[in-house]
Amino acid sequence: MTGTLLNMATVLVGGLLGTIAGRHIPMRFRETVMNGIGLITAVIAISMAIVTHNILIPMGAVLIGGLVGETLRIQRGMDRLGAWAERRLGASMSGDAVEGWSVARAFVTTSLVFCVGPLTILGSIQDGLLGDYKLLAIKSALDGFASLVFAAALGPGVLLTIGSIFVIQGGISLAAMGVGTAMGSITETTPWIIEMKATGGVLLLAIALGLLDLKNIRTANLLPAVIVAPALTRLVETLSRALGHS
Image (cartoon, rainbow, N blue to C red; front, side, top):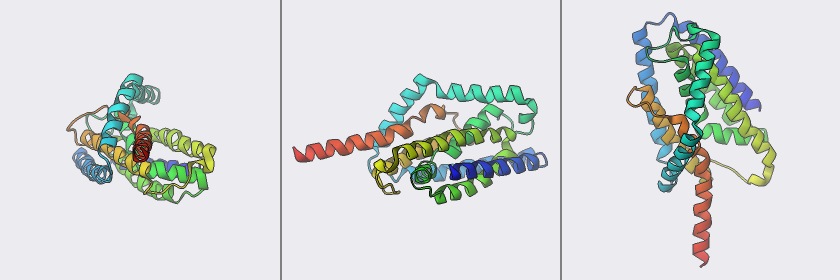
């Protein structure tokens, strides 16, 4: 959990600094910054998605994961959590945000940006299995800077993302600790990690479209795809071996 706690600390510091600085930055500057973040997110998303070795796996993962997410209504749950926080903590939380961005939307968007991606998955597993948090330390530095920019543009609702980081990254690390060495050797070239990364890229692209106000996709409902992708990868590998022996 060391890497997760470090990540939470950097997002807290960056978010607080961004919240304070955001009050002194004109709205047009914040809107331009948001557009810049959206473009960079799109570039990162595409670079992640194209690493797939079999495009049918990310496609199947997104389709199946989307059906699961819609059934569970994950997006609605996250929206309600953000709205609840806004009611409890006061309307002042969204007073400095870019027009059209509520606390709930800021919370959902930044939670997805910070918690979907190869560094989150691989770093959390590595921290849980080996106690090696180097990858999460790198992610923490990146997230700290990103949270500063996000908070300056969207307001302090970004700080709620700390809870998402604790639940998602911490949960993965604890699960990895429980599984232990039974998971075997895991690297960035492990097939299911590659397809998980590609699927995460698809989700990040959906986030980028929202940041650019091009399309507001219920991205949270696609989150199960990140879990489905490794399962599909293992299934394809098993079928390939079975057909090879037949």
